[in-house]
Amino acid sequence: MQPAHFTKHVPLLQLPFLESQFSLTQLDNGKHNGTAVWLGGQTLALSLPFLLATKAKSKGDRPKRAIELGSGTGFTALALCSLGWDVLATDTRHVISAVLQTNIDRNRGNLPFGSGIIQVRELDWTVDPENWTWSHPSVVASQDTQPTSHSGEELLGPHFDLVLTADTVYIPELLTPLLRSLNAICRISSCPVYLALERRDSRLVDDAFRQADDTWSFSLQRIPNKKISKALLKARCKWEKSEWEGVEIWKFVLQSASEPDQADVSTSDTPSTKFLL
Image 1 (cartoon, helix red, strand yellow):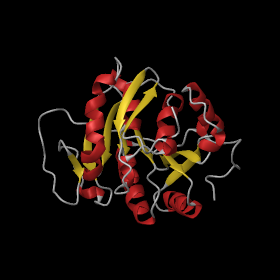
Image 2: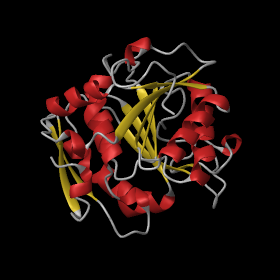
Image 3: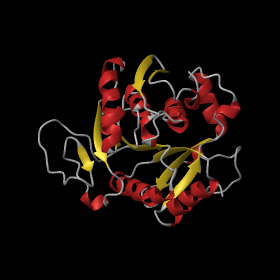
Image 4: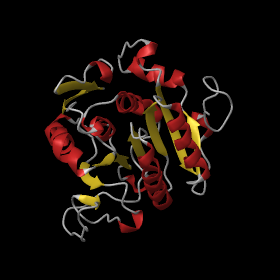
């Protein structure tokens, strides 16, 4: 498997994950950032087996449940689902119709025995969480429609055991909507967030971390690069360090929800600080 920035011209990607092989449509036409595989999400997906050491069952023996914000092509959501998690993959309506729904439907048959279930719904971060709904089959939040209640198939919703988001810190105007959305989910579910990004604009990234800490009450811990490197090697990705070292994976924990797990604190790659500045 090649790093994502080498394959953006490929309209149908074949991406292995453990014993699975996912076939993913992507669009790199400049119309929307979310319709192609990006390196942050690719690296996060490949790191999941090593970030999530616990079994995919929670109390009561139900599968653990995750929500992804900005699912894009669906690779990370499919990877987590293949590990036994139930996953709610969310994005904007455009991304869902362009690539996400097609990719999820195409790859359901490629999920191994013991996988969780996976659902797709629209979630527009710019909608105030007070106006979200978890009982509509296709929409959690939308600027265009007011979702109504739905009864029928069992829908994934809170409480979640994990939130994932990757390649979603890229423009200033979306920082507050993203962090507000993460905060709202974590206040309901008391769960951690794994956030992956490429540090293209350090000022923007540092501003996101300041807001996460000062305004939205998250504690932040960076996953050590050594751990990511080992995960990539286990995934049989023989990448040069220069091809992925711009990727950072962070664990966010809402301070009012629980104390962060110290096992993921980076002690070798970064100074002993709450976050990089």
